[in-house]
Length: 432
Ligand SMILES: CSC[C@H]1O[C@@H](n2cnc3c(O)ncnc32)[C@H](O)[C@@H]1O
Ligand SMILES: [Zn+2]
Image (cartoon, rainbow, N blue to C red; front, side, top):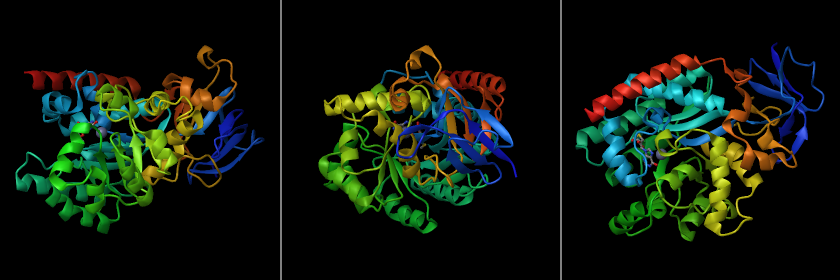
């Protein structure tokens, strides 16, 4: 038996208290065996967490990981213009190999910032799955479906491909990969396609993930065309089940919040993307008070512009207060929950809590730096002050992915070189 003991640190427990403890991991099963104070000397291998905070690995609840290749390609525009004028034309030139290279870069960035799992909506999913498998992280993957501005055959092909990918990859990489059916949004997938394919996704037994209520401009056409607000429409179309999770939920009214709470559908809050595209401020405190499961996501690196979940945590706390006009809204412990168990629950993962029997997905955050001194409250530091570069070790499924900032499963320099070259060639193709 091979065991790993993570020793000498403080541990963020599932009740969001912090205590001095060690974590003993069974590597063959990838499970946590024990969390308790005196496990030093118990493991076959030791990971030094002294001076550190051991947290559940962060779960990025909504991403387009290969969009790292478009980081900084088009900034300072609202969503609709940004997608139509810059992003979709560039994505039209992306090859399967580009997506693989972009995904490698994104997953590298995730491992370096303590993220062990993510949900991803994109195309060329087999390439993304291969990167997830090799890098050792966990992901819920899906092919995004867009039917507007496509002829009928192409639209059907897109939806069918999303179901096929969901069926083929669910359970891949020894169970680290799970899947979902992913219609892009309620305005970019036509009603007849939802009517045809949502029941097929249910039959397949995969959750459904989509963008919803991201901008005010996305609400109006749904009200005009269907006579109800977007989430009432989503409920009518069978898109509001307890296993489903939607990205954004910025422009939701009280009735829609109630619908989410009753249905048990989760919301992935993406504060950085919402601020950068000036989409608006999600009512996170109201969602939490209504009992909605809220997770956090970065969205793609082209609207963020990084994949650090610690940045997202700080943004969520700050924006949540501003949205509620209340400094006590979205406090540090709520943010710590969204960053870990909230996102994990939304994605239907067993991760997000450090306790015996849970998957051994964790990160160790180095606390011994000036910006984390003094250490009155480590949950406060997690929400407000820690940064990606403070992550010392990352473990997923019991396997070490990064030790002392040395990434073990991805060749860092080679990935960066390939990404630079691919991004430059892509821009040259698009811009002529
Ligand atoms: C069809 S694959 C996914 C699709 O979504 C695009 N995208 C990236 N960020 C956002 C966002 O904030 N809202 C809506 N759509 C977004 C991405 O570029 C892909 O085309
Ligand atoms: Zn998105």
